Length: 67
Image (cartoon, rainbow, N blue to C red):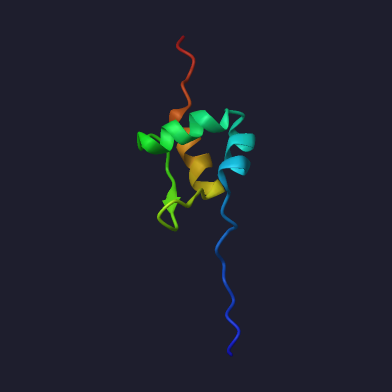
């Protein structure tokens, strides 16, 4: 079998994403259900998250200080 090199980053589980975002896992479930956070559905009941996509999403959510 040929060997393939991949540049895909590891995907996060609900546990890993909720730990990284410092939010409860139930909140993350709710955000996925409402499509308010980027995620990947890799199976009928399996959801994963790209860390870099979540970082970009967070950066877009950042609110600046008004002067």
